Length: 248
Image 1 (cartoon, one colour):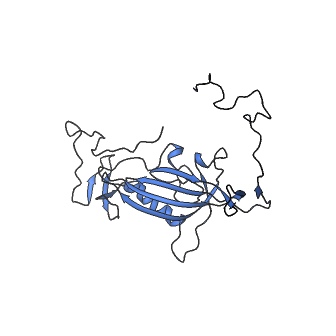
Image 2 (cartoon, rainbow, N blue to C red):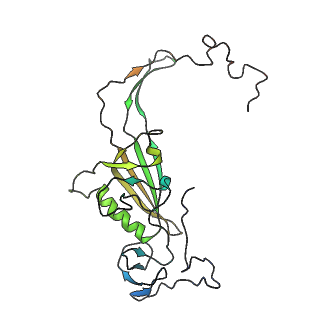
């Protein structure tokens, strides 16, 4: 089950305006009583799209009304990154907020067609590096703070060198699907701030895939025999050939 983006506009998580669910006052002062613990929270200057932002005793940031875990617990909702930095969560840094991952992996294809003729000869070459898009939903200042620090490593500023090759893990990257093990990040869009306070970021990366030493170019002359080929498997009826087969 995917992680749910919480919405806690009240100190005890109760969204009701009655009873114990009294709303958090954003205050105009520089300190407030931390509604999530016994420590005093100090107001800080931080360019988050919702204000004010306070710093807790453990150094994390929060904004009243914007609550939730910094990192997702479901592996489908995050990308684990092999970075040895201070951005470590249980020894493994990962994307903050909620991540949605799309992988586009394909082979290079040439299509040769004679003028005026039907059909074409398809020549299939090797597998291209996969295009990976990671959409991040960010709704707390601590998630945003971690993303800002993480992005400076994934995508160095101008004159600071090329994006490094980063080992990455996600269920969509596994050998059973796309076999992606490392990425180079090349683009980020956002934030696209929604009316409910969520900020949407889109990160684009290319798979790091070394060139192979084997030429895998191939041009097929005919299709492979199938179970529906009556010349090879007469016992298997072709789809639609039996009136008694009405489908599932």
